Length: 307
Image 1 (cartoon, rainbow, N blue to C red):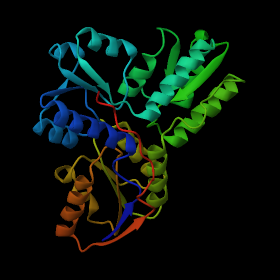
Image 2: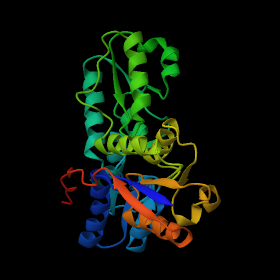
Image 3: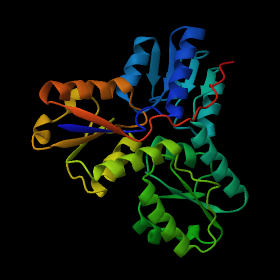
Image 4: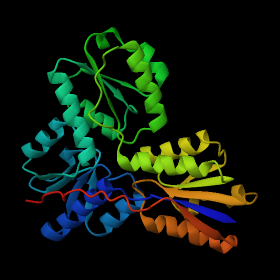
């Protein structure tokens, strides 16, 4: 069996920054350090942090007064931060700088009197956090080009759009085209909202999916960027695609007729999860491997300030 490893794959700079914030807080303040919601969408990452003293909670009300609280990479509404500060919590926001860029954009559009249309998935924490930057009714959410035609009348007039950073690149392009057709003069972002890591990983998958019999995406089913990689692989013509969090979820029977397999990992998936899948495949098949693309992306972010 020939394995084609997609590069880049695995952790992006925003994920690395968020995990680092929790680890440094544990070192600096000692456990427990509380984290509102999953710091990133990966269970093995959360389990690793829990083993060292991180405590994941649903809401800030679940955190004892005066404790240390880390906010996730997906971003939150300002009222979440206000509620945490009202409980005298030491709050550190690990929001990805690229998500924070989108927050600043939508606030600017609102100040300029524009109704905001968010391209993204309703209920995703990043979309919830972005909606929370604006008053109720100041934004609508669309996830497909067809939904553009069903936007309410409140979206008429000066309009702007922003995009979830982990959205599918090609689907976003189709939605933007529909928005521009319906709302001539609609304002867009200054530079792409879809993050470099999402774009790079989807591009690598699209290239490899055309030449392999099967594709393994290592990531969580509740990870937006992992699910988008599955969609990209299938859209590129590879129908045999598995999304697995780890080796235990891999269905080897679906690979028996495959002479070649593509493998990648979501931006929140640790490298050891991919290594474990490769080791498992190596116990069942005689493997040859190659890597397509460059794993080094050259992007780093400043650490979350813990002071």
